[in-house]
Image (cartoon, rainbow, N blue to C red; front, top):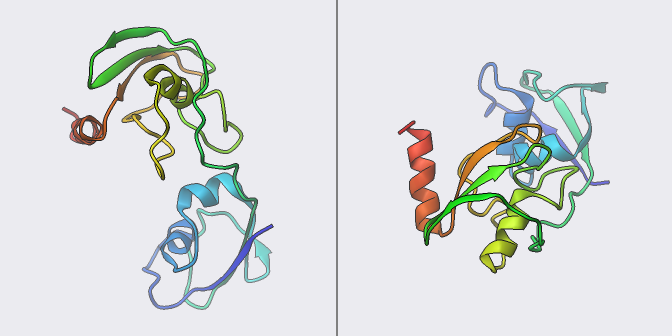
Length: 163
């Protein structure tokens, strides 16, 4: 079980959340990885939540479990494809399907199915290839996915600016 010990110094801004502060510290891990793999958080000897505000001098111990491998292996999962061209694949995601791998859902996701459909391996270091927006596991609906990095960047910009 990996652990990190962090002493809060003067780099903590007023009102900064514990998870945000920890993710900014050298040698720590991302907020997403903390959230998904955290077993416990101890601040000054007491259990704490990531939403807690840090204060100068706080002593933080983070304990987490290592996540499953981030290597994505394409899986033959049927997809309801509504539209597809060389840049995008538009899928009617069924209820119960997770969009991308995360804690507790390391396989059987839309990403795994798309990689199989596209007949490609996952790009190194990208656990969400093609995903520019998501739908919750229990939500069915239309999701647009990018088939290449340029389209992914463009679509992310369109969603970010609500265009």
